[in-house]
Image (cartoon, rainbow over all chains, first blue to last red; front, side, top):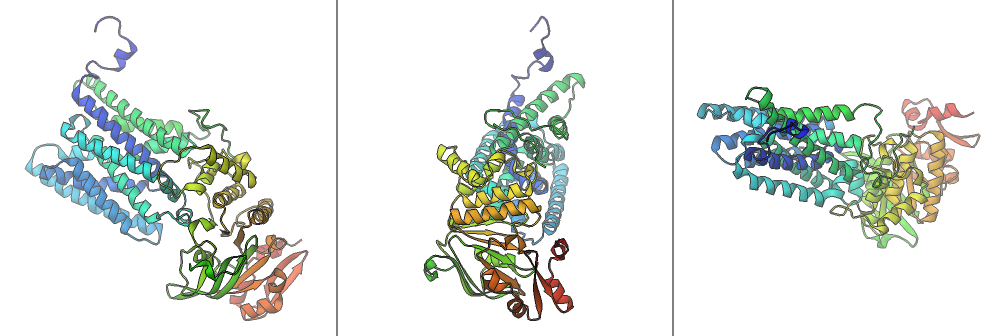
Length: 303
Length: 277
């Protein structure tokens, strides 16, 4: 393309839309962002951000084992995450602090196992397994992962759609839900299983450690902006997609200004989420009304 | 909960010879009372007297070791519940009306589809509880009294036969207390629902209670306020002499002897003693 540079051609480096790794990254990244945003709203309402992060850390043990034994890494992340979710729900802690401690101890143990597998990985191969698992390599996702990733993503969204009302009620107040006949403990377990699915998808894109950013960040931003649960969920998914695609674009462009080695996509995505959060979390910002007809009355804080 | 066949005509709730222990410690002993449709009953007692345990037993969260609890209808739809110390985070993405709608069908699977019928039922309940003006605000931005109204709407939208409230008047300013008390009186009559609410101070309820269940040390006396809140009756319940003093239309229950235990158990609300003009 010759002639005057347009804004578009400045923002988007040539070859962006035709690059196979970019297209796979955009598709899997969007799947991870949608699932993380949707389930993340429930995680934030339930006050389980720490549990979400813990699941991600523990699932990295599964991811590194998958690398070591040469199986689909998504299966590794998913299996270990589901195992961690189940064991976290099995701990019948009487006090919230006890639950926090148990989660912390399990997280430490999971990361220890991950360290062992990663050590064995580096001694048996020269691939940068540790960096891939912990910080992701979205441009190097093998096409063979795509079908399974789509199955996991669609199943997670169907599960949230099915659980929507009882999960929402039990996330607001377990006693209110129990009186209405909702199986509260089962809701807790199913929520963490869906978090494990979201985390597994994020792990293969932005990496296990950074998956918390995609799970909590867009949901936290959406909670500042929307005053209806359904709207918050849609908004969190949209913010997740926008920051993921934006991060991919920035990282792709960065090859240009960094002289060929580029910045990691994970950093770019999480940096965009962080910036967006800082902007919306300013005190005194009025609740935003993206769809005026759907939320008719402006919210005013009552004293 | 056993079959509702043990209920007499007009009775909505019957607690018979119920005793409850928690981890080996006896909390409630031989509790007996019944509630009829449309009755407003105060469950009065100091902190630690077993009020919450009794409410949780009626809800079916705890099972009595002895005796039984019968509720008309028996199922989930027949009991509404307002939990204690319910304060939502200001960032909770939920309008007041969303929480009321969850009272209607929060236990069903799937995403709710907006329908005229659903909207009408929610609007009707918001109107009945004078909550329409703040129905579209975030639930977490509402005052304590407004949140109580929304919670009562959430509990009442399925028209339960019995409404249980755990300390609904705690942490409210005096004007909100009067508003909620008047509202509960009206709700019990209009919907013919039996209302049982716990409180550590009976004074705001004196003019509206049809019945009182007075708890002390895990035992209870019940009847009309005039029959129960008397020196002889409460002295017998506590097991030592106490005085019931009526000043300026308020009731103060005071331990006569300076037993430490008695002071803690009986003079449970010294703040209100001080507030008498």
